[in-house]
Image (cartoon, rainbow, N blue to C red; front, side, top):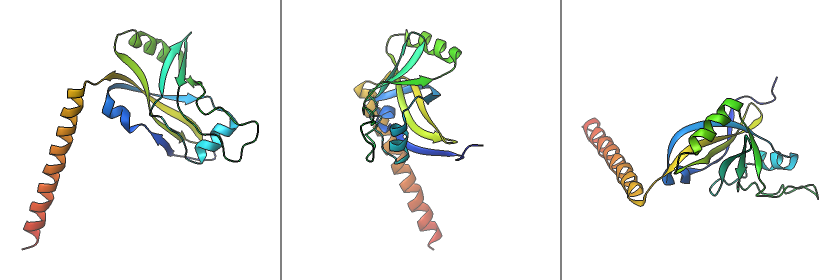
Length: 160
């Protein structure tokens, strides 16, 4: 029986949805040391510059920053070390085949605890061009303005 149940979000990569089209997502376990787990339980991590790669039939998470544990001793971990991701062999084979296609990369989307175990959600992503980013911002702004207009109209109608 796990000590914790449910999902506790630690870090989220909001920039990934701005910079990439996310085509598919996978949930992977992550191999961590003790001080990394304690640092994550304190809610500290940064995914913005991270990415994942497939080497020799294994998936590796690179450049994700988990700061050193504040109460750690000489056993503390390196903040930006390469970490192994735990996926099924079929999922790794599928990722390897998909990543051979040009322009695709693996990006960490979120880091969380699920039933007491550290998990990372990785996405197969295709980079956006600058005009795609502008278009997405315009759509978001239009939705916001529509919602504001609707709430103002409802407020006026209800205030009679």
